[in-house]
Length: 422
Figure 1 (cartoon, rainbow, N blue to C red):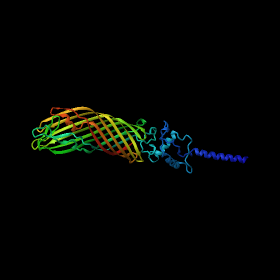
Figure 2 (figure 1 turned 135 degrees about the horizontal axis):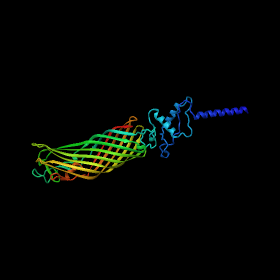
Figure 3 (figure 1 turned 90 degrees about the horizontal axis):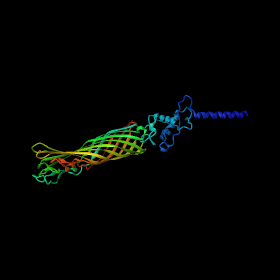
Figure 4 (figure 1 turned 180 degrees about the vertical axis):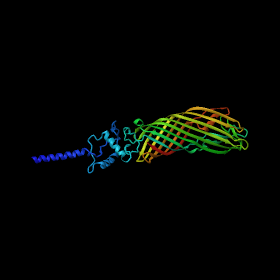
């Protein structure tokens, strides 16, 4: 009986010893915790106000971490049943983030993928960037400015009207592609929410296209409401078309889910263009004429940004925005006739305009803080005043006129630049 009791006591002691070892680390040894991660942390049904969201790859790195740091000759220390507590998850995530300087708390698949992180971004272990700053070169091709008649043959050497056939029309100008500068800044998860704030500016200061010509034997005139002769027979003429585009916008972005963002904001666009005409007579001063327009568009816009695909370093996004704008447009006309007489008029007018923009953006992360971004985009302006179209509604001979703001322009091109994440 005594032997049986001793055996039972020994078995109980051994069992308690193993149990104590299983639930506690050795004294003086750093505590390395293995945890059971919350099931599918990116399923919104698992989110609550106290959870720290964990990525799936954390489990594999956790095993490696705990195995290296467990006491010699022993397996990783296990946790009690409350292993999904906030403190345990936070401690483990911090260690994983600190292991080699690479954060792991961002998305279901990898730390680079964009996501709202509604809870994790409020925690110390969060790796979602607070700021994204991009800067680089933007290049856009501008469509031809319509088909308006700019210069016509004079009827005879002695009379202007009726006008002869056109010598120059607006579609002979080809603005082509020109470069500018773009800067954009995004503040992510404002107030620890799913809202981002964005500011973007780009500008291209000059498209230009020149068309040289020789005036017909009967001379040339500009077909205003009251046409004005600008050259007699044989006097060389050249014309240049120039334009510029500036855009400033402020947007709020709301993550609807980890793959889609709603965009809403306010945008201002300045579009100016002009046609300059130079006549070089054999005798006498050079004569200049110009038609200048200015468009100031401002209004709200809405759109969406979709995260199409995201790899370890490379990502692809598609975006679209559009809005109804108020356009304060104006034109100024200045003409010098073949007799060196000077005529001028100006006009202002309001118009409702539309601006639409769509594009596809690719990003490649060079490091945790730097990346390369390229974008292909198209931009459409409808309801704007173009300089060639003002000729038909202007009458500088009498100093009267109006503004024609019913034209459209189409741009396509892209952006290449660097991004900084902080």
